[in-house]
Amino acid sequence: MGESKSGMNGCFKCRDPSHISKNCTKPLVICYGCNEEGHKLSECPKVNPKQAKPFNIVKEEKVVVSKPKARVYQVGIEEAKSGSDVITGVILVKSKPARVLYDSGASMSFQFYSFSKELSIPLEKLPTPVEVEITDSKIVVVSNVYRNVEIEIDESIFRIDLIPIMLEDFDIIVGVDWLDKYNAAILCRQKIIRVVNPSGREMMIYSDKKDG
Image (cartoon, rainbow, N blue to C red; front, side):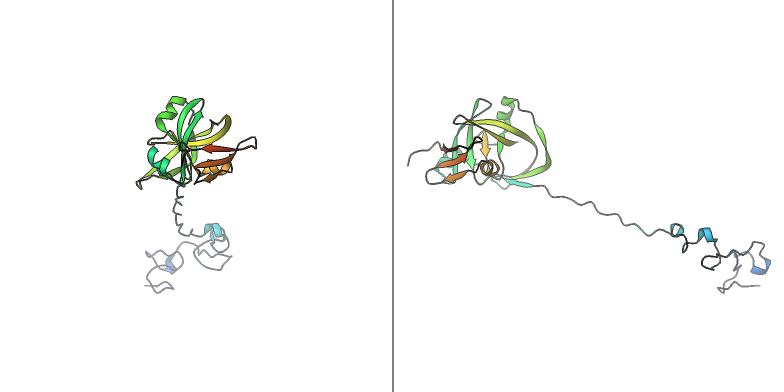
């Protein structure tokens, strides 16, 4: 009984183990590209790379982009009045009075949910949801914003982006984003904010507490 070149029983020409090579009725197939047996030139993986077995494809893991983070420390009205780094007051939002807290510790500006509903301001989606850290270290994720809301301070009109969240004591918290936009400087001892209004005029915003 004949053996194939590999030393195993069967035909070395067609690789069929049911017969030996001298009884093989199939023609010997030789590749003229690599001179190896068993395949044609058109099937050669060396000459035609597309015929080669593909490499194992490792699926790329989805990159998780962390959400932007904001911070807001909610304080009560009396606590705010006694603090040196926050200033309180009343402004007009679409001609409606709103209790406001100017807070340099808040990275963005926020608006109380219920107050927003009274104004009928259209909501927009944030490009990316924002994680907001509030006073008790609780994290809330917000995805909406009120864009370019018109507010009036001492007869000057400003624009502000407000993120709706649950607030205590205040209708609006004005954060660093707005303070920086209008070149604000907080004079802690005097409890005054110096800002430049849209017309380029410097003006003062006084806290509710003006004495001592």
